[in-house]
Amino acid sequence: MEQIKYYTGILFGAGLLPFAPGTWGSLFTLPFIYLVAFYFHNAGVIALVLITIFLSLWSAPAAVRKHGEDPGCFVMDESAGQTVTFLFVPFHYQWYTDIWILLGGFLLFRVFDIFKPFGIRVLEKISGKFGILSDDLLAGVYALICLQVILYLINVL
Image (cartoon, rainbow, N blue to C red; front, top):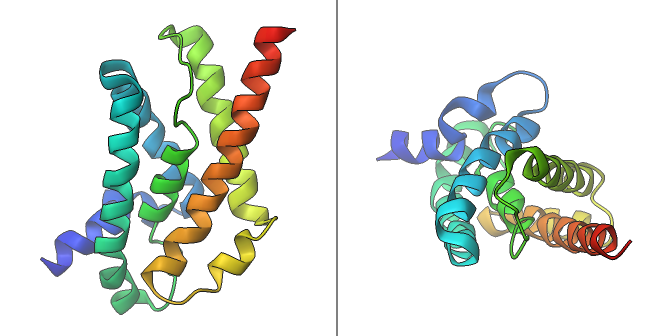
């Protein structure tokens, strides 16, 4: 069971890729987000947020035991935060427009996750699995707000 938790936490190897494992974890989450949104719409994305939060909290202790506090290879928290970014996003279900929405949400989330403004860095300092996850969730909320504003402005202008 410990190995299953560990491999879930590193997103089945995405967290072991070189150069910015959090970016890989976020990127590998995008197809799942889109497929869930395509088939289950907003309810599916809400469910995916809850599932990724659960999986992050469930698997974090295994990664911490193996690598120490908040290990870089643990990327399930990025998966949860990235999923938050796409809550209630109005996809068109046409790849040539939705790819830009996915790319925009991905970039916004990574900017907030990397630079950690507006209280995100404070949450990162919380110890344990809740600290590992909470900063990514707040980065996802900020990215969600920015993405929604951008999409609104594009539709209005």
